[in-house]
Amino acid sequence: MAVIQTISKREKLLHSALVLFGENGIHNTSTASIAKHAGVANGTLFHHFDSKQTLIEALYISIKHDLSQCILLTRDTQALPIKEQAKLLWDLSIDWGIKNPSSLIFCQKVSAENVLPLSLRLAAMKQELSILETIITTGQTQGVVANYPMDLMLEQCKSQIITSGLFFINNSLLYSDNVYKQSAFDMFWRAIAIND
Amino acid sequence: MAVIQTISKREKLLHSALVLFGENGIHNTSTASIAKHAGVANGTLFHHFDSKQTLIEALYISIKHDLSQCILLTRDTQALPIKEQAKLLWDLSIDWGIKNPSSLIFCQKVSAENVLPLSLRLAAMKQELSILETIITTGQTQGVVANYPMDLMLEQCKSQIITSGLFFINNSLLYSDNVYKQSAFDMFWRAIAIND
DNA sequence: GTCTATAGCTGGATAGAC
DNA sequence: GTCTATCCAGCTATAGAC
Image (cartoon, rainbow over all chains, first blue to last red; front, side, top):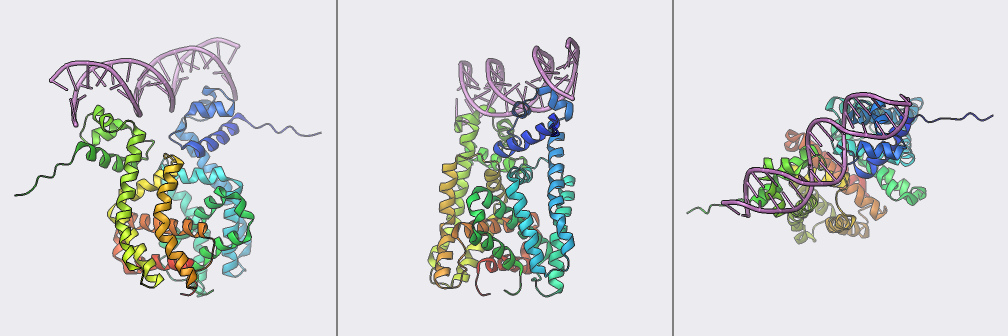
């Protein structure tokens, strides 16, 4: 007997918000349209979330949680050569973006429309970049990664991953093309690597 | 006798819009706040611009025009080695960003909040990237630049330049630090170069 | 928890005097 | 060209029945 998996209205609202925020922008999406898209009454939204702002923050936190779950798998792999660790991180990140395009686009809009308190943004970013920072630091001590300033490297690496993710979202056919996939990682790696 | 340079209210409105769009996001900036910031009456804004949308597009076009003016200087330099052409393009772009931080931030928000018709965005991008494309193509025929797919390279290069620009805007002291400046260009160049 | 109805406000845009 | 005054649509959020 199959278990009927009921999706709560709260989850429906979060999902609809994610989709519409991605399509129209956050400020440009009304709570009314979110409720309508979720097939839920207007007032129900404000039963589950105190305000539109609360909804946005809940969505952001759930997405960051999901992403970090997907990427934390890297922890087992600290014995691998640095380049392969980097490749794994890159693959996991891009795969997550391909599978959750709305989430990646939403994250981009969140930072562009600065809708979040700085404290929340900084906390999420610290956590998000910590794996990358470990890889770079280790690579530098091994003489495999260039000694550019860390803050600059983190910004560039993060930006390259997001750009690649968005590129493959917008050109989804190309993600199965190994030339594109390999090229994107090569550019990422060679920007920071010392040899090869 | 000094000429009194009067700044028209239209220009004041454009300037105020640029500043406020950058600070608060485009959708999140009201026409009333723009008029107030410009020291101009509400109705005056709609005398100069048919709608908020028209204002946004006029601003975008004027910025793109300004940017291309600054960068077209590269045309004289086709005799230089490719790496130096790339450096010149990079320097001019970053310098423009440092001198016009609001403009760079506005451009970022325009693409993130997709407020412009696709046609306008594509036209601007084509023009913007043509110099970069020429440099890459020439570099490839000379065997100096890697043969990754052009569309991917253009996206990544553009993103690296914007990221560096925003980084130096947010950390303005570091722009006079040659280690940072050189590192940022090195990452840009090594991502696409074949040999150092 | 979910709905309907609506309050209360803000935003883009217009009309018309000067 | 610039202003003041104002219309009206659409938004967030609340109240109260079920």
